[in-house]
Length: 105
Image (cartoon, one colour):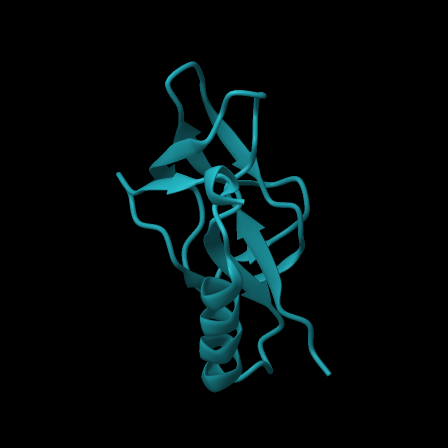
């Protein structure tokens, strides 16, 4: 069974609770390796690149440019080509249903 992997909003400092997507370095269908720059994020204190924590094909980009999202929020889904769109939809729905932003924990 193929694995679905997530790229999520990183936590770059103790006080960071949200980040704003300022641009994507990859597109749906691109192959990405762990450590590759996936997107750019800005916070109140810092701007930087988010490196992919996983390798595979970018199957879905969830966050759009200028979206401000909490730490841990789903930004993109990476998997192998054989994973169906229905499996990706179910994965995203399950993540979103169970996600609790840090300030609400």
